[in-house]
Amino acid sequence: MKALSIKEPWISLIASGDKTIETRTWKPEYRGRILLVGSKKPSGPLAGLAACRANLIDCRPMTKADEVNALCKCYPGAISWILEDIELVPEPFGVRGQLRLYDVNVNCHHIGLAHDWYEPVPDYYFCSKCSAIR
Ligand SMILES: [Zn+2]
Image (tube, rainbow, N blue to C red; front, side):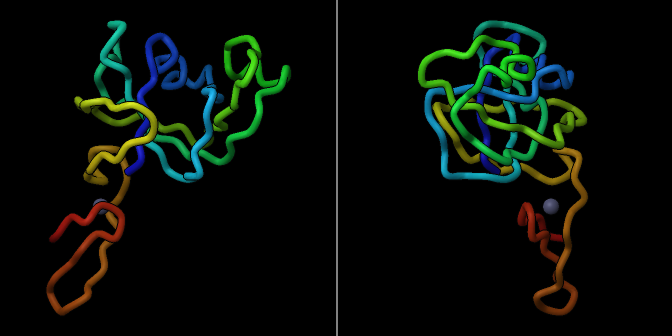
């Protein structure tokens, strides 16, 4: 699953639903489900932890109108990352953060999702979302 590290206090403001636009000076090609992780520093309630998941639906140049949902002033080169369907991770768990977008192996249950089982051969069930085996 694609993941993005975000510093406190912003990660907590996203987790609480107050902030639905994250800003960066770069944009990824990726759209879709994303895991939001608190950066290790500075310290804070979600530092170093996978805090929530969201649907990254768009990345586009920031506008003045975005300020209210980004909780920051528009700045030169700012790209708004539009987050929808923000859901808390049931029990935040430690993730070693990296720069930019990175991949984290997560079990559906750990991020509050149901497995999506399929049976490629009789009596063997695999989850199409996280590769768990039953
Ligand atoms: Zn799964």
